[in-house]
Amino acid sequence: AALVQTALRAGKHVILEKPISASKADADTIVEAAETALASRRLHTSLDIGMRWNEALIKLRGELLARKLGPLLGGVLRLHFKRWPRKWQVQPWCAGRAEGGALREVGTHYLFGIQEVFGHGSIKRVRAQVSFPDGPDGTAAEDAVDGVLEVVASAFGNSAPIEIGLSVRTAEPIKHDLYELEITGQQGSLKLFDFTSLEDGNGKTLVQDADYGRRECIDELLAAVEEGSSPKNMVTARQARNAQRVLDSVFASNGVWVPVCYE
Image 1 (cartoon, rainbow, N blue to C red):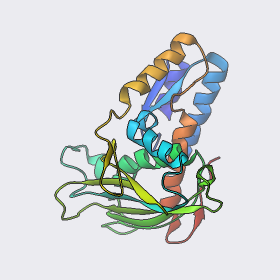
Image 2 (tube, rainbow, N blue to C red):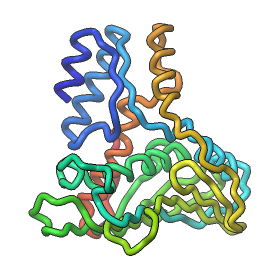
Image 3 (cartoon, one colour):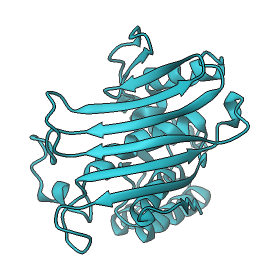
């Protein structure tokens, strides 16, 4: 948070890597600093989360809006890894609970993506059990998460919330890491996998290896800076904090339902 404040005080626009921070307090400080700088000095703060421009995610939302699956029944988010940290993640913090871990590093993309599909603030409650290899008072990142996200799906014709299961594993005997968000309805299912591909329940590919949206993150920030306007489509600090709020609730749940407090 201090680096963001310093940059904004120096009159610089800011783009942050996800997640927005490693703590609730830092996230709140960043959001306040970003919104104050925008209102008073037209300085922009954005996040490098490309899900907003991910063609596969956009297609998923379009199919749901078109009621292609009929009434929605639920879903599951699976993030399974052969090892964590992954082979190329050599920085020690990736394996630590304070700043790293699979749910924080990878789950942020998908938790943000769920809110892009269903609406920001749509994840109302979570219930999760998180296990750590060195126990609850240690420093190592989680090795397993089992949980449920309660999601409002009224935009897709559902009068009641749906439940999206959450499964994270970090030492699975699998050939390839698994990144999947699957949504199921009465008339079929859709699966977003490997971040940027989408297939239906029959295995038909609808989108294959689309661009993730990294360039658009930069383009949107530059456009706002050049035009001197309010953010139009870039990911704001407040929107990025929404994903972290879900993470905070998952880690705080301890097996019971807890609300996701976005403010």
